[in-house]
Amino acid sequence: IEAGFPNGEDAWRDYLRRNLNAGTPVDNGASAGKYTVIVKFVVSKDGSLSDIKCENDPGFGMCDEAVRVIKRTKNWIPAVNNGRNVNAYRRQPITFVVED
Image (cartoon, rainbow, N blue to C red; front, side, top):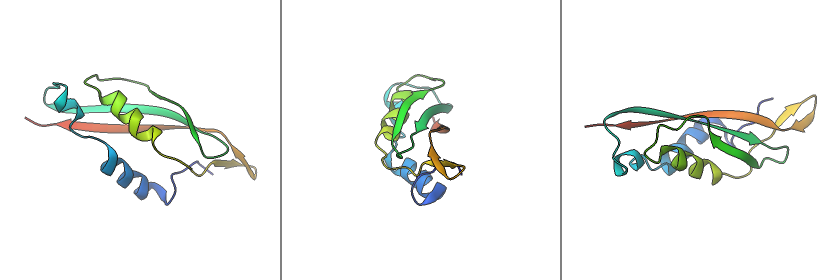
């Protein structure tokens, strides 16, 4: 069983929408376009997160903003393998859209 955010994927998307500062790239001078940051992290056996980092960084503060928001989450549901909680890697793409 994969690790997951409490109350499922819809709750996770809602959390990201509510808490990410979508204006970060604009505030830092990004030109119009679509920018995707991929954040990789570990959901530990106890549901805590660790090793949170960006696989790519398009700049303009987007990586830092994505990491900041993911670090604020707590108490994930750990992955289960053969009836035991295990550490699991997770990759989360986050897209920022900058319009003219």
